[in-house]
Length: 104
Image (cartoon, rainbow, N blue to C red; front, side, top):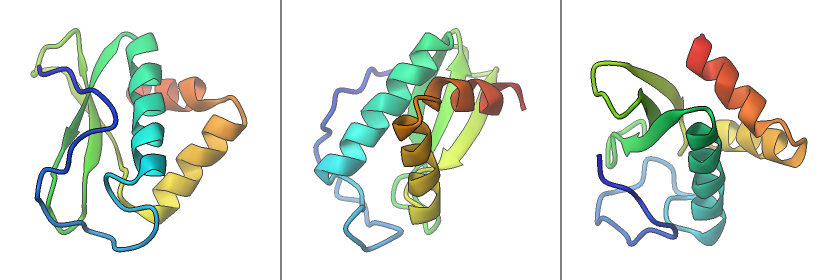
């Protein structure tokens, strides 16, 4: 699995949502970086998939880098999901939130 660095460069794919929190903006990239850090702490490998789809980018996680064991976490382009994640970051509970999603 390819390790991502943040902020990422634009991939040329279209955005699912057009607003101030869209893909590749500084706030979006900082949020993703925090999500990736929390997923790593939980012992999983984070990845971004579904770029350019009508539903938008999704954050998924693979256990131990094995593609056969994975979890869909959320559609991170969705503004409502971004707000939920931001609340978890602000409340210091992002890792707990991620752990919950990984065991769901």
